Image (cartoon, rainbow, N blue to C red; front, side, top):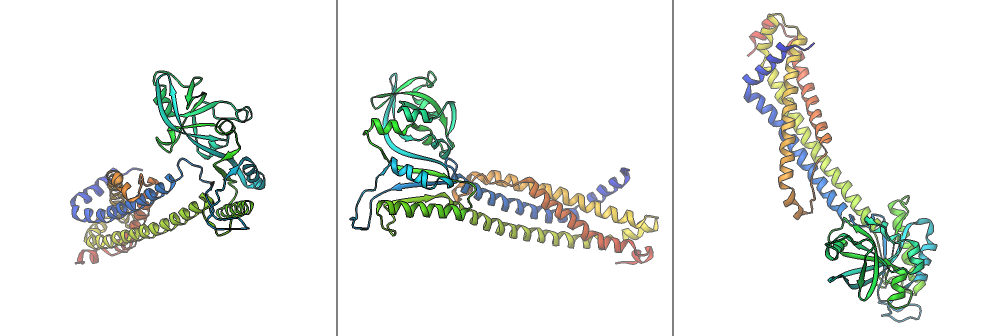
Amino acid sequence: MFDLDLWREIFQSINKNRTRSLLSGFTVAFAILLFTILFGIANGLKNTFKQAFVDDADNAIFIRTGRTTKASKGLQAGRRIQFKNEDFNYVKDEFENDIEYITARLYRNVNASYQGEQNTYDLRAVHPDHQYLEKTIIQEGRYINFNDLQNHSKVVVIGRLVEADLFSKTTAIGKYINLSGIPYKVIGVFADDGGDDEERRLYIPITTAQYLYGNNDYIDEINLTYNQDLNFDQAIALGNSITTKLKNRFGVSVSDQRAIRVWNTAEGTKQIDVMTSSLTVIILVIGLGTLIAGIVGISNIMIFIVKERTKEIGIRKALGASPRSIVSIILIESMIITAIAGYVGLLIGVVVIEIAGPSLEDYFITNPGVDNSLVFGATLTLIIAGAIAGYLPAKKASQIKPIIALRND
């Protein structure tokens, strides 16, 4: 049953001993404040790493070509390696079981115009799977499909900002835009988390581009995502196998690093995972050290508080108070101070992170923040530690005979 007198007495004790209460609370608040800021910074660093893949699939492999730098198999250095459709099909068939999505790319720069509005944009000719590698978000209409490839359809998917540039007074879907003299029907409008540059791009079927811009089967790049069931080491091994087989296919030296370049996100993701795991462990150790310091601080203060109140305890016992009620008063008072101080420390920590957040971006810390449940858990740990620290001396003091307690100096 709720004892109003007990609670009134507790708050009166806190009010009368403000210095003692403030010292007790400061230890807890400072520990939670540091704990909040440390984990906020750690989460900010993790967010920075994640943003590196915000507009691309995080299980992607990009295969690009260049010129050979070394002679190999009777072939001279300086050869330009050129991918064709047959190379795309080779990779697709050879590694079928390990591939999730795959697309080729062709790059062009085009002048786009519609009813007097015009601008220059990057154009990418791709396969339908490209949508998933680029994390393209279709806002209106649809993306390129396999029928478009088979029919060499002159259709285009435009970025949100392209629509804003050229179709400010109407919607783009179903309209025809002129791309460097060739009309294309707009079948979709997309958004991309990668930012303005990504949303000022155009996508057309790769077969259409090959037919219209050269009448050949050349491609500039092969991109794919590996099966997500593969772990990092298996994904890295897949990338290495692709590199080896393509170099062998084109007669490129094994040590030639420029002729065929494979960038595997698994390698970067693995490094980031190791870094974030190490960072988490470091922050956790520092955070636990901070909490331990807080626990030691609140424990020492609790021992001092109980010793200081020995005479008070003697008077209470002389007036008939039970040992249980004496212990309860001390523990509840300690828990209230710790809980309030912990909340204040959390609040200050969150405010500091919010204020400092924008300036921390210069140090690769993006949107720093902390999970409230983690901080509440830390605060609860301090409350329990304070209660345990106070219970033992309070229990011992409550068992002292009143006459001895009243004589204590």
